[in-house]
Length: 128
Length: 234
Ligand code: SF4
Ligand code: FES
Image 1 (cartoon, each protein chain N blue to C red):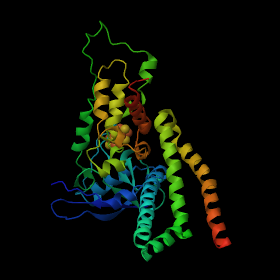
Image 2: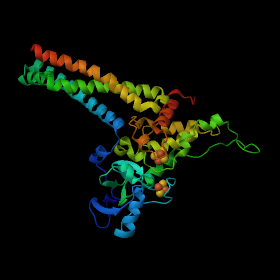
Image 3: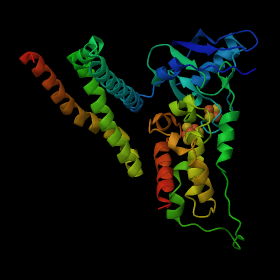
Image 4: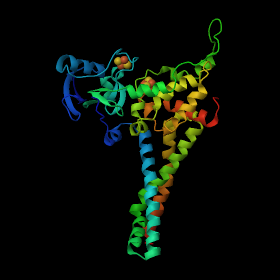
C-alpha cells in the first residue's frame, strides 16, 4: 500500500537555492506584517478601551529596535520581492533573467534596509 | 574511490516509517548516481527498489532527490556532487510506494487533464499541416519535456496541495497552446485558469532549476498566465 511520506520539514530542506529563499522570506514577511498590524490594533484597542497596561507593553514591544529591525527587513523585502514578481508576471520574457533580477533586488534592498537600520540606531543613540 | 550513499528506504510490508541506510560503494568520479544504485542493487542489497529504463536521460523514469534536489540519477555524475556522502531520497509530494519509487498516477492525471495532444478537426491538407520555422520555434522549448516529474515534485505549491496541476502539465499545455496547428488553446486556457491551475504558481523557480531538460518552465507558465490574462496568444 502506498504510504504518503511527506512533511513540512522535508519541503523546507529542499535545496531550491536563492529563488526558493526569496519566496520563503516573502511568506515570512507577509506573516510578519499580519502580526505587526494585529498587535498594533490590539494594543490600541486595549489602551483606548480599558487603559490596560498590557496594551502599553505591546506598544513597547513593537516599538523596540529588536522588533523593528527584523520587521523592517521582512516588510521591505516583501515589497521589493512583490515588485519583482509583478514585473515578471507582466513581462514573461524577463523570466529568463530571473537570477539577475534577484541580484538586482538585493542590490536595491541593501541600501534601503541599511537606511532603515541607520534610523533605528540613530534613535537608540539619541535616546528617544 | 569509495563513496558513501545514504538512501531513504521504505518497505511497505515491514516499515512503519521510512529510514536511512548507508552503503559504501566503489566508484569512479565519472560514474553516475544511477551506476551507484545499480551496484548497490546488484552486489549489496537486491531489495533496493528504484525505477530506471533508458539510463540516458530520455525516458524520465529515474527522477529522485539527490543531495536535496530533484535530478535524474542517470544524468548526475559523482564528481559533480562534491566529496561528502551522497543522499538519495524519493520525490516529494507523491505517495511513496517503496524505497525510491513513488506513485506517479496523480502526476499523469494532471498531465492528461490539459489535453496534451493535437486538437484540430479541420480536414488535413493533402500532404501535411504546414508550419513556418518561426511558428515552430514558438513552442520549441516545451517540446523537450520527458515527463520525469522533477519539476512538479519540486514545487512547494504542489507539495501543499496535490490538486494543483503542476508545472509539468502546464509545460505540456504550453506545447499545444502555442502550436499554430492546434485549435484547442481556448479550452486549455480555460482549464488552466481554474483555482488549481496556473495561478497556484508563485514564481518560486524550483521547477526551472530542477528540470533535467533545462526547459524554461517558469517562463512557459508566465506565458500561459499572460495568455489567460490578456486573452491573446501573442
Ligand atoms: S518540464 Fe522538465 S522537469 Fe518537468 S517533467 Fe518535463 S522534463 Fe521533467
Ligand atoms: S533512466 Fe531514463 S531518464 Fe534516467
